[in-house]
Length: 337
Image (tube, rainbow, N blue to C red; front, side, top):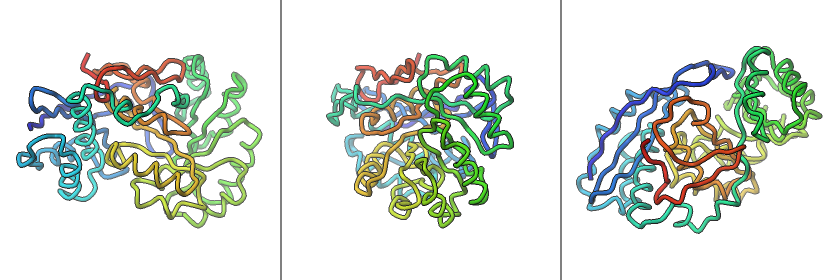
């Protein structure tokens, strides 16, 4: 079993601006796992918010020795060893998880969703993300997203009301709002929530900083709009403490270490009567196609990371007007162009 990797620079169609950062380029690491003539592909899209860079990802991958494992089919044992190799490094671990699952599906000759007995047609529509920007650019983005029935709007800047008012002057589509921890105190957050309540908002994602859990509980008691955790939930162990503070969770493969843990997170959230969403970073079709394998289990999907870039080096899941169409190819279905 051999591992190799390359760093790719992905270029965004527009500057991607959220409450704490802005970028025009994303650097991701594509992992290639080869065994028995079969290649499985994985991806890491690291972010500094969670302590990772492409350099830390490649260093982590270089530190792994999987030579003692006879086959990638020993997935559970391999992932346990990868987890124990070092703390953190969640997107790097995700790359290994995705490559193993892709290899396994290819070895068996079936797509992952079929292996798990899932029906792709049950997947919810995916939203299209509009990041924080000027009125002029927001208008352009809304026009570009005309085919998408749901828009996800990044807030938490100094022009929240202007952003929403601009979009509402153009369309009455359902909006998902993501503040990315941008509302720093509960009174400000409550004022924003109340202003948004008659604006056809499906939910509000991470309105306040993850560290302010008591304030988030206070806010949820007063919010008529469902609240979804993002930065507050990285991995499985965080979920039980969030019941009562949020109505649901946003799972991202790059934060939770991949498909194996994502499936467990879905089960725990369901047991706690919480809604389940899957989001993404800026990713290629590798990460997006992998996440889409679990889409039939979701209430909400925000899997547009590769729609926002101009130079995806892979072909995989199709996102047509928000409808995710999975390929019949085995594994996660993403292949190099």
